[in-house]
Image (cartoon, rainbow over all chains, first blue to last red):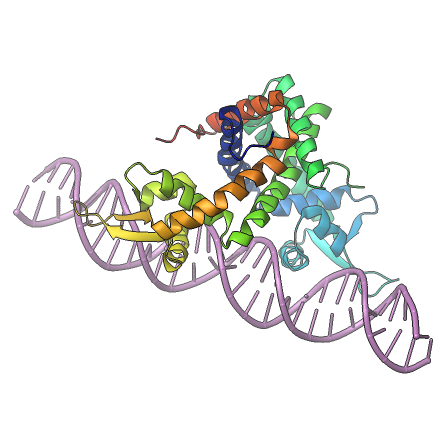
Length: 155
Length: 155
DNA sequence: TAAGAATAGTTGTGCCTACAATCATTGTTA
DNA sequence: TAACAATGATTGTAGGCACAACTATTCTTA
């Protein structure tokens, strides 16, 4: 019975989530700044480092990142200037540009990964019981799936 | 034992959360746009409407919103221009400005609240079992508290 | 009470992002 | 194959936000 109001329990969950998710993001971001790049930059490098062919088309990358094409163009500009990412043309389709992570970028990423994992553990995972960790996964897999964006299913 | 890596279960939870939270925010935002204001505007109006004295100091409001002072100034500019919010001076301390919601603003808010609640229910609450709802609350109360930002404790 | 610190808010500036428009290339079809 | 649609990426522009600098006011204290 989908009421127009939230029950006390529902309100408690919604408010806790809504208020905390921004703080959590800010904390993770802050822990990463000593490494010289933002959480957004970090995510780009992670995805590029996991790309099976070592390179991704701009449109695929922007899709994975949930970023607009123009947003990705500018984000890559910065990473290219830092020497962390390389643009290259596709030989078979001259519309597409590939992005790939450079050895320098991989180094920078690897030096940040440890801290970031510790950060995630400290602020999120470490605060939860094993049961809650499973539940957190269940919850956001359900929500993401309902949104048409099932997580972790990206090829 | 705080490892430098995440277990499969931890990774599953983290990835699901990280990937989905942005999509959820976007969906809630999209459901609100027909009403003519953003989720940020909505939050301002909610907090102002709940203010016991009907008005809040800028600094208190920015604190509640997790917004910088300058960010709040510009956000209020928009809401004032729309006629939804009123600025007024404090008689006892001429540094402070009060913000209060106008009758027009209250109308606009009330017309949006129903849709927003339905939106929250559709995208988040409605996807979860009662146990998961409790768990969601528990989880983010723990995380928020660890971040020094216990949710729902704002006076 | 006068001087300096602290507080409240606004403005200047810059970064990040999205949307719309644009250019180039490829695909489709009449 | 010529015309039109679709796709991939970038650029112009504008909005939202943060940080730093600034003004105004109040608090503190010597």
